[in-house]
Image (cartoon, rainbow, N blue to C red; front, side):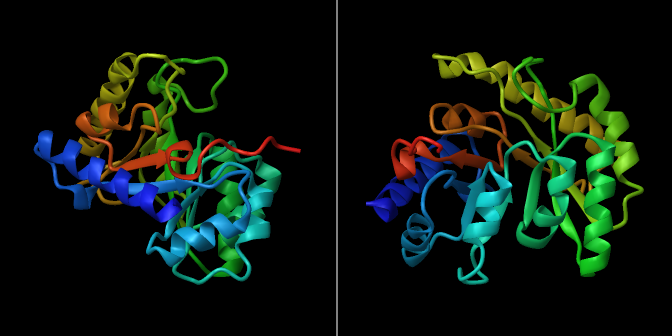
Length: 231
């Protein structure tokens, strides 16, 4: 069932991409497996899917051992600075860097591990008091600061807009993130300014995000069903 759901989502991605004049190859699907057992990841991987998203760093630490190297984890939750060591060890991308202190701490552990890491800067594009992220007005300054951190590669921006019942209400936020990324790429603030990642859109609104330029979408419920209640 999980593989069938992933296949259905990828077909929809291809459809929405084509309708927007985009290539589906330029859009990554992150299967958000938070609070689900590692068996769902194994099932999805058996069906050919390799990209997963987690919100709780302890879950990544528990799930990562024993999984094939091809399985990649994006961390998409709020990352506490004192958990940076675990993230550096077990994650392939941190999508939620929103402060210099966290980047410095990540760099310290990456230095010890002799590795580099891709990150995204999380922008609170909707100024939602319930969401983490740097404000759109302060994002450029943070990107300038992050350029001096040697072991992280700032690949783009990520956002989680305010929760809306109508997906169209998310469109201005997605468009705002794209415009911000375009402005920052002109100032060469990303690792690759010709291919800037935009992580935006979830199960309910990813079609709108694709229309507005998303290169990474994060889908959980539409793949795995309703999440177990966190203990």
